[in-house]
Amino acid sequence: MSMGVPFYLDVQAGRVTGASGASCDVSSREMMLLYWMALDAPPARMTRALASADSAITDEITHRAAEALRRRLGMDDGAVPVLTLANGMGPASTRPWSERTTVTILRQGLARAANTPIVHVVGEGALSAGEVRDLVGRVAAGLRRDGVTPGGWVAVDATQRLESYLVAIATLLIGGVVVRLGDSVGPATLRAMVCQAPAVLTFSARFDLIGEAHETGARIGLEDGDGGRGDGIGFADWVADCPAPPPDLLSEVTIGPDDPALVGFTSGSTGVPRPVCTSHEAVFRTSEAAARRFGFDATDVFCTATDFTALSAFRSMVTLAFLCGGTTVLPSAAGREQPLALALEADSHGVTRLTAVPNVLRGIVKAHDRLPPHVLSCLRTVFSGSGILDAATAEAFRACVPVPLVDYYGAREIGTVAYSDPDQPGTLTTRGGLASEALIRMLDDAGQPVATGDPGEICVHTDGLMLDTGGDADPSVGVRDGWYRTGDLGRVHASGRIEIIGRRRDIIKTRDGGLVSPIEIEDVLNRANTVREACVFGWMDGDGVEKIVAVVIPADDHAHADPGGLARALRARVMDRLGRYKVPSHVLLRSELPRVGRGKPDKITLRAAFEAGLAGTRD
Image 1: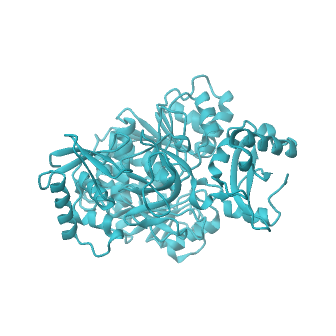
Image 2: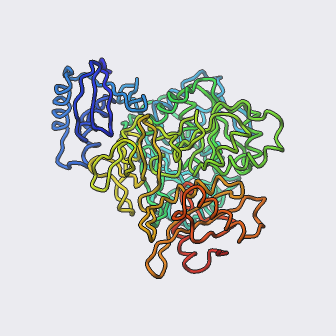
Image 3: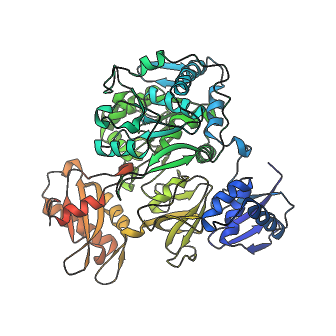
């Protein structure tokens, strides 16, 4: 990388200040150019990032614009700006651009000494770097034999089992793309994933649910025997039949940073789950940023309790340990399903960095009185991924396991590029959020920036998002003018921290004209010790008046309490903390909530059930 020139960029104000103190205004386009220049990206990558703002842009035009911006800022031609953003960080990498790929991380991890343990499979033992290299090499040779070429899609159950771990690594090393099949989704969603993302090969233990869809390509069962495949060939037999890999198999494929690495799926809340691609660059840079922010090193032991449909879990399972020289623990089937078993396994294997969904954290809290004293004292950080980490859960978990708890993803679109502050009890919804090396702006309905501290739509420009962020069924979300319009409403405070107010499409307008964000009511309800989880949405009555509806899962000790009394108490709680016009007109008690992707409550289904009179007790 060329010698850097330091600048401070205030994204919200649209102003850049140099080391000398001189400053000038910069346009939205110039901010994006500065971001990619700070990454030392080639013009072709800049052009791809800016193309949504102007389809006529070319690499030559981008290059000239970058050089003109350098001259305007008093920089030499080709000099690299070093940006500092409001939160004290900025886009940077010590790796040359061409090496910012998942393959670079995987090769680095597998190049360790042959006898170095790199993965512990609970109940089966440790595997060394040499053993994993041999297994991955054989799987990679089998993938090639069965027709997987660079860019080819390989579908695999996104579980923490060793077979999925090996298939994912081998696929990426030969230039393939990993299609992550959700482990916890229902049959209809699973079949939709398969049909929407046809693969050359599919590795699954759920072919009995998938059926005979031809989009799976060749089928290899992951369970003992055929795993529901129907023709008797399982993973062990398939691997035994794979050819021995040539010595250079794992080093001969060239992958570019903006080539696709992973395929995931939209939540399905607006229809059939849609496949979206994540680039090698996004996996590499978010892994690198997380390692730098949280100080990961070779003494770290990583474990994830959720499937790796979320990028946070994939990093925890594979890339973070490979990047920093640490090790990975793959939990047993019991550990993946039972929070108590997971806690015991994590403790016995010395896990230092645990990634878990909020439901697992709640389960550990519930089981804590059955755990030995000081269990999980090995932990340095717990990352909550893929679900809504409410304040009540965060506080209860910290009381049981006093280690920093980070909201790694959150339930909102902004969560893909932001973390909560590990030194604060708040989550992203309570002013704890920090953008990780991304440009974040708050814009009003006219697309103009709002003042610091004022609410607006959260818009993001970063290399850490999916390659495909447009075309969403929700017209409020997508790439416009080079910025990803998340559909989230929030504030950026002077400190650089982000406060999420709610979803733009979820905002409720009451009879008296007040604007209500469901998330703030949910936060108040979730803090009640009588509530395990709350979901709030708007409902239009027959007179065209929008009302507030709260659906609540009571805490176990209150599951059989007088529903009318509990509902009145919860309304009074909202009244006391937020005022009369934010009090729900209906409070419904349920034993569970319907879910969409990443564990988010399915508000569409809840609203439809409520309107049909099927949502349960009304008060």
